[in-house]
Amino acid sequence: MTLRATGSAPDRLVSAKSPVAESVELHVHKMEGGVMQMRAVEAIDVAPGKPAVLAPGGLHLMLFGLRHSLVEGSTFPLTLDFERSGTVTIEIPVLARGAP
Image (cartoon, rainbow, N blue to C red; front, side, top):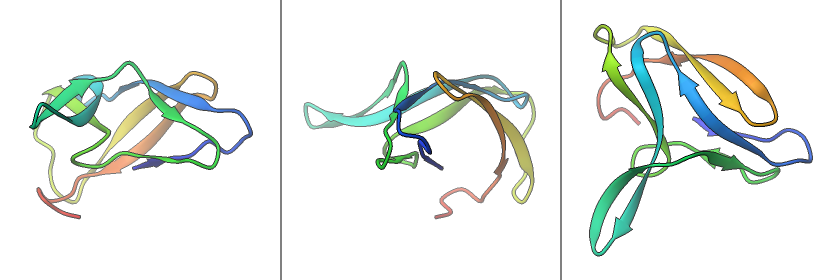
């Protein structure tokens, strides 16, 4: 997923939620002491002209407490809460594990 600030002011993704999970956390992978670590982050910055790319191995969203299995080929709603832009709900496609 790529987040873009369409105006001239920066924005921040501050939270996310979905009816398919008990909670959704903002995370990042970072190398610390030669070991890859996954950490929750408070927000994801989105600057004009510098999109924030969410992908495996970097910034990403983690769904915890899935309420049911996610079926490849289906979609589910994800609500993103931004500091400036407010709330945006998008449909997330369920891809096969390891899909590009």
